[in-house]
Image 1 (cartoon, helix red, strand yellow):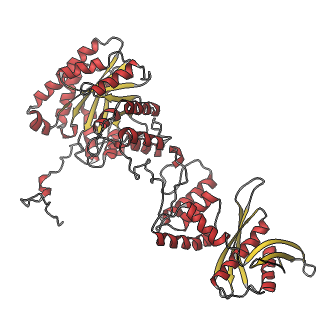
Image 2: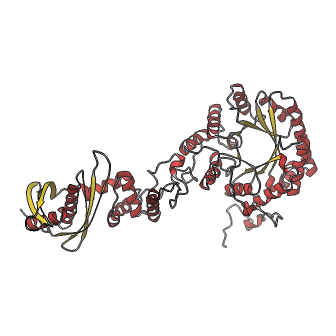
Length: 576
């Protein structure tokens, strides 16, 4: 591979030589690849802490309250509400939640603290009076941080964790009326040797003495995503299988997204034995973000697993997150972006249209529409923007718009003919063609032209000379002047075509005919489509709309004839 030297690299060294591959985990009998997720994990939102600390402008009190209210409404039962020992704003927010009784009985708040005496004391001050709180202790354990940040060996790092755990244990004993749940994170777990991660967690476990009835949460953060998701899964499975007293711990994940695979890592981590996931709405967080719980939850939803979180109004969730974080959600963001249920490609549009039709016909209850992994209505979206038209679109998309927006079920040949006109408009403008513009083009092409011929009225009686035929007399206008024409045929269309030939000199053959209703009730209208051939062999489609299907059919014939005249101004049919 040819690689240019970065402009600041004056030494001319190949930048790729600065990095080494992540060492795989020795787990030849790994079990997670054969497992399937059949139930949601325990969810813990860290929007108000991990997400908040990553904002350009951290949330103020009102934005924090709005985010907390949203998380509660969505159904989160564990919410990390801040780092109260590090920020007066966080401390005051935690106190407000408790003193104003804003925490529902079934919701547990979580507070984060480093393993330092004064920070732990301040943390316990913040949660005084809470019914229940998770105190989340952490310290860095990775080989890199031990070497370049703390300058400590493994024993020194274990000592930090144990002293913090002991202080939390002792303070918890004095918290009357407040249930304290212990949580420990070996920060930068992904950069920590597995044996050492187990050792430090078991040292903390020895202090807290968890039981199956009162479990400790061990949270294993991918503080920096350092490997492919399968290696993270191996790390989680190794820990799951080797930690002592597994039935007395809740195994939690806290994936970040530095490699862009945080969602995959979380899913594989659950398959590997994890019980719980900490993440944020839409993945807000440091650098490339935390794992996205919306993405994770709706991934479960597509597999028939109830995520236990309410995503039924995805647009409101997104709008609230954008307001609180003051960061936009990308229009291509999975499940939530403005464009994720929209198809511009012609082949995609055609498949979606056919899938929708098949769903309606089968009435099976199963969602089976190509290119749409979930029903947009399940997350509060409509079908209005599923298909949008630009220069990449095809007849399926145009037909879908006319059917869903205006009730017209165009024959396939007419779809192709009209799509050419839409394509020309899109190529000329270079822009998206809105449903309104599509309808305007359709009207201009098939419905509006009433010159030179326009239908007024008709009547028909049996043909006295041929019992299988009828005689039709119609009043039309030619260039605005009324004219009566008369013809016979085995149906009203055939008789009308005969009348146009006899009295107006219009040579036209009708090859195909379709009709359908566009509404129900007293104001129902019918739409008729005719495929007509001019004397020179050119095909024209005509469209007519009327409450009376016969009138709609005759109007459709004139729609085609008017297009013939417009294309060949000197063609027969303009007789005085």
